[in-house]
Length: 438
Image (cartoon, rainbow, N blue to C red):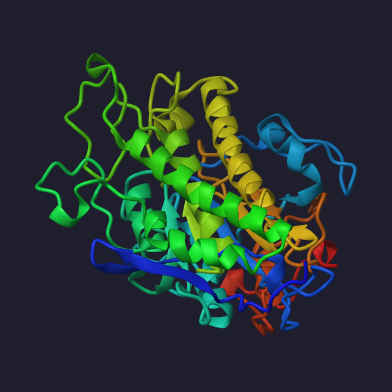
């Protein structure tokens, strides 16, 4: 069947409770050229950039992989990424060289903005905002800031005292991304009489979706069905996770906020929340609602109680004796959530590649060894090939504790920011990391 010419900016529109709603479409063959390597209007698939961040660092002795170049093998703490090894580049041995004056703050400020923290704020814009200014203007959201741990602090800074806080409510994030007309989860106030039955946003666009299918080939029809099914499944998943625990005795705290997941026995539902957020961000990127994001899994200095941990995460990094097995287990569980997120990007097909192929995700933390707040051998992972601009499947090991901002400058250039240098003072660099560039 010959494909109809359909604009890739087409959306499904309808009315829900008297309000206009729209649902963006996934990348369909009808939008692409005959080889599936670009859009039909000859523009390439957009390159996306994101930061995936967690607090309290790692254990460097269990982090750096064995082997260098393409022959690296996952270390114990990177084992959850084993199935994605060929899509990841591990950068080790590099250091944040700005002044380490603010424990858990100087590291991300130095890596992401090229300067030290001043008066408890980044003194310069973070890399995501520099990139958003370059590539984010054509999308609905120039940048998207999300998180898992409930907090209002973020790592995305437009400038001094201009923090872009993460949205940590999956439901609020869903409503923001996919239209108006939803009530807050768990809201027991008088419902809108127009919504006597809590209808899905998809119900409002069913007729238009059916008409669109008549203009699509078999592959696109299947892809559209999967896309809409994915949205409906996310609605159901968010509703189920937002409910109170089945066993009230297992939760000693008052009811959680209406738009949040209640803690269970004092422990946040980190994995459950993270995976819903991951799927939502992947869909937002796939629908080209944004091309720049920060996903803040956990805050610096957090004392979250992870499964089976006897104390909070930050406390354990300082107090646990020996080789810190509980800290190790926490880091492994965090990297498992990173693996899920990257897998969500990898599942989205775009032409001959995937969403992950057309993205680059910088995964990092606030320190290396939490016990000492060290900025040496800083944790840096890169996932995705940035539309073929970056090498993947490598372990680059710096032998001279190079400035970590060389990675930052490389990412700026790869994402189209014409930067001759990055950072100031000890954070300033004029050359990128050529070893990871195609």
